[in-house]
Length: 247
Ligand code: PGA
Image 1: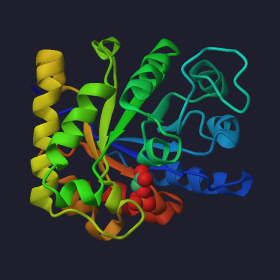
Image 2: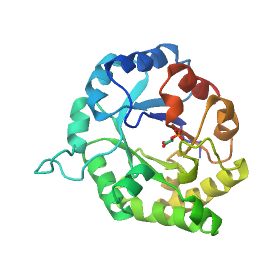
Image 3: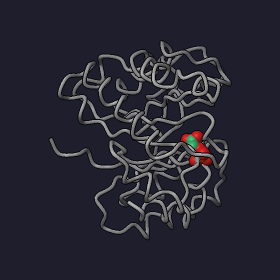
Image 4: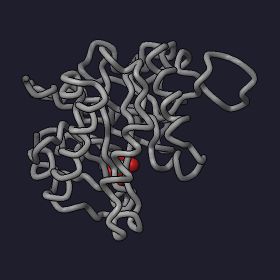
């Protein structure tokens, strides 16, 4: 089984305006010929403009969340079909900031993943433990439980990935040790094989949480790490390119 093509995705969160599209253009212009897929997930307001700006380049534009339904009376929400219509090809789902801030459960995330697939979007499904859960020795159980609960059977045969993002490492400058990352990614891989059989080898397992140019090489070359989900360091082209080049 050949390793999945690595994916490095930038999660801009609630950052960026029209002028920031230049950063995305700059990433696209300087991508080398590496065996890597690169995505940028800007706020929904920029998806259409960024998709136009990056048309014909190797950078994939993605979204950060979607609603489960296709249309309806859901003020403020955006469906997967609308994101695809705006030019998104990929969507981050179940990010810890949505799980914690909006009460998103594994069950809801699983429905959102199914909605993304219905619209032809490639889901990046996020999982990760809190510091309390890690300190209590429950990190593996929590994360593999989230993997089981958040991945619907509709994923079989589709392109998707999982992102392991320890909540305590997001935006803090803290990261797990390489052996903690490898232990978790290996446990996630074993769970994917249980759920999807041999196909469970295909989805890349991304690491996310304080990935920077300085620590990217070590993290990206760890066992079972198939790429990165990058927050803060994806906002500026130079930093994001530094991470991509570390692969
Ligand atoms: P960070 O965020 O790289 O700023 O830690 C990662 C994420 O939340 O996806």
